Figure 1 (tube, rainbow, N blue to C red):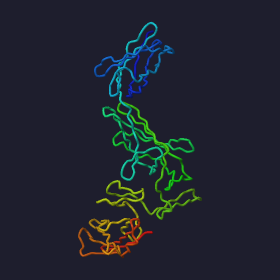
Figure 2 (cartoon, rainbow, N blue to C red):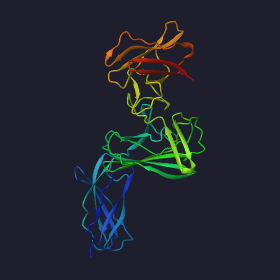
Figure 3 (tube, one colour):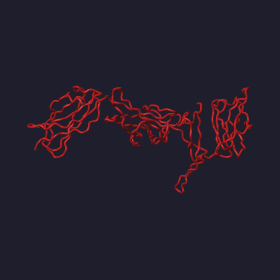
Figure 4 (cartoon, helix red, strand yellow):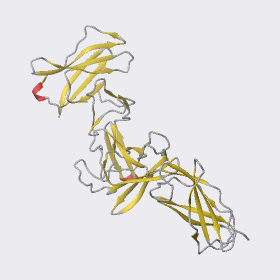
Length: 395
């Protein structure tokens, strides 16, 4: 027999300051006693490094593939970051040498980094160890950094995995689909509450903490790993709601859930809306609005309902009925002597035509009873072209 030509598989990019280990592969032929590798500049094809012969003591002739690790260490002559190179290898035994392998290209650049962010209120914010996740299905965004303006490193794809930690044991909860396209965002399902709104641990929590882990790969297959640990989770849930009731039907082995709300879906500007503490929508910006729709059941007798606080004097809303062309423009009014606050229609459009004169004013409320934290309820009842307006403080 003789020595067969060795071969090297595809090489992932690596940091020249750190080095990497690749595989020398031999299919069949005699046992080898050493090998030697050669590195070339990919642009000029000039030989820039020749290794010494590296001894192998445990190879046995075989018809199968044998693999030996080759360390391409940091500091090899001529190899620097932001360069592209080619490598080939030759094997030896005590009497003969093999033919030189085909050349394989590899790239070197500084180690890139990746960080995870969660969507909070109206922007994505970095997630650090021991942070609080504010949703059972948060939107997670990955931010890639090549860490070198001259690097060719570009994110190709990534995968996010969620783990739960309970009494020191780590359990896999969810492995997301591969994310291929920018923006690299994904909703990560599987979080559950670990703390209450005061930051105290819940007695009945499913997990003590959570860990988010991401593996990301550049176009040249440089692997980047990042994890954040010790994550808590807290979000608003419905407790003792007048809209949802849960019944344990023990004799039937069922849990019955009844609800007066068939959908929370709606539209807003901006989309998604800007939230305040995950409980309110910020409508203070010019032109901002929110509308709940799609089977949102309204309790009688109201056709429209609005809850809000911290009103500014002036026009606050335009409410549109189910009939095309109907609209009501509402003003939050100060009577001018800082004594009473009232609500009124300043304009009514019915079937697309303005109905002047048409003016309705609510009962007046002592302005000293209202501050920025006072929640006010507006109820509007429509019956054909007749309207009624209701205005009260919610305690």
